[in-house]
Length: 118
Length: 108
Image 1 (cartoon, one colour):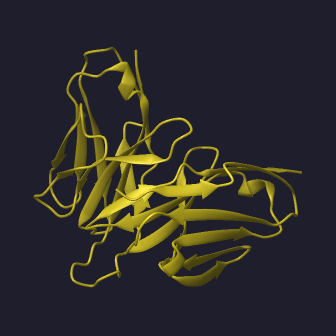
Image 2 (image 1 turned 135 degrees about the vertical axis):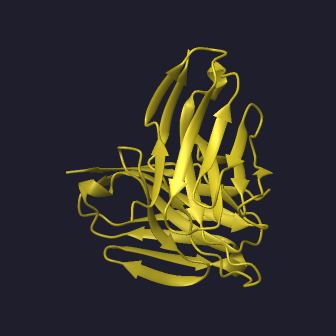
């Protein structure tokens, strides 16, 4: 199993350009997430998808859109990139088991995409 | 949302030393995870620990959910233990809140 994969690994954009970050998982997980990590900070949640067909905003959603394409894939789109979006982006997935109280399974992360916006 | 605080923010260890990292969270959580981010940026799962104690080699973790904290112990540290350690609390329906991390440097 490849686990969680992300493409591209690195990207440089100019202000105003658009791009889509791709994420896929092969663990049959139902929940998927996008985070950003800035220097000196922990990861902050941008958007998540609890299950196929649903998406919800996280802590820092402004300037981003997401698409849960199918159970395996969850993409993050920057429509008009800004320098403030320079960051490392991580995708993650988890098998969420509704109705089992605190028995939620652990979250696994992809290798990250390092994005620079000039 | 929930607040997660980690201490100490920075730690320098001599190889072979032991250390304890602490994670406090502001509200009840459904679960807690510890991660190690290595110098290449990869996030590696260490522990998934809602309560109690778990051990994995030289690492162990304890979560006391009623008192809202978790501890990560590193024994006989090695240079490969260097990196940033994050704790993350699962709360609400489906969200994981991260602390800012403990930067650990192990010197030979």
